[in-house]
Length: 289
Image (tube, rainbow, N blue to C red):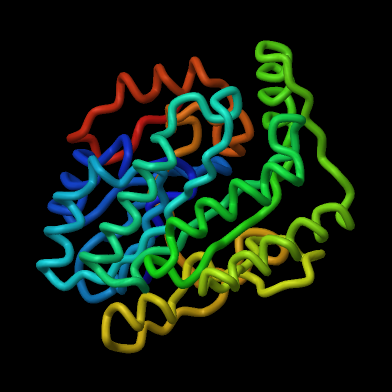
């Protein structure tokens, strides 16, 4: 079994102590996001093959990763670095900090240990086609040699995402839109060419209409390479176009305080901040509503 930590929240950035406690205990309890009873996920033992961490800031998690590496526990990091204007992502680390962290992770754990995510791609009058070309190229140039894959996707505009984007647009005076697929594909083609110039393979996360290489964000082959032995896991995607290997996610929605206005995992920022402030590092389960 592969453990995902977590596409529902940023555990490395905000919940490193909680994860360290759960790793020592050997399990976590997870709230079922679709209703029903909480369930228990093992974090150690023969049934645990490896971990996929999702983050925008690995620095609070350094000691945990070092301990896992010393114990020979396979892991990989899906590291998001988008360098968008502050009205869209008000509290993430700077691009320079993210680049420094990614390159250092690659130096310590190998190039295969990190995938750069330019994700999600959001269209606003602050982040139009030209912005994305220049921004992506600058990041790709800085990350040349540190990563061999960059994963992209276009923002999924759920009802809560639309509401949060509308509120931010009104507050900060920008306009956002969700263009038709042909316009997205044009940008995707340009980004793929830029990635190739910098020795990266561009993959596309859960976009069934895309003409390009589909991503496997929970990547059993990459984990096998890192582990030095085969990690067998069946494909079990989370939504149409998803080619991820089967995993168990231990995060919770409405618990990431980054405040990115396009985020699909946060419905209410104030409630999310309250959840974060009251979470208990020693608890079996991450904070929820």
